[in-house]
Image 1 (cartoon, rainbow, N blue to C red):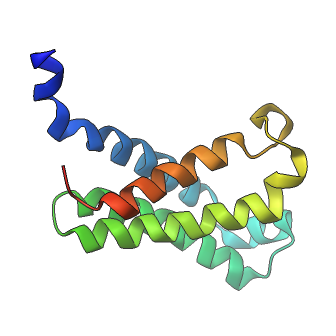
Image 2 (cartoon, rainbow, N blue to C red):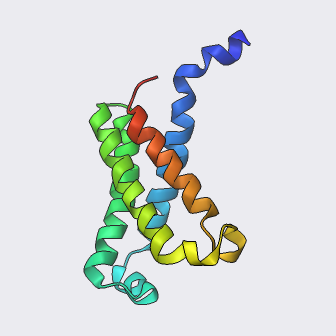
Length: 123
């Protein structure tokens, strides 16, 4: 158990890296935003804001681990807002299971973002 206890300071990095990698990659896939906007039925400006929040939020979550808690919190907040929107606008109507387009995975991402928003950079 001492070995696992010694890893506690790096444990939040597991969540930070997981969240950032999902949002940077998924955010980049939304460019060009015109295609994403059309597919989702969003105005182009909303699609652009979503894509920027995902990429920017992911980057801020990573950079925040090396800088200040506010950077982590801003990135996590941007991601949390996008996930709330995704749940309400897209996934909730499909139920829980991700295999049916449901909220399962999006809720997990939201909870990880909320963890980092609350925790900041505290170990």
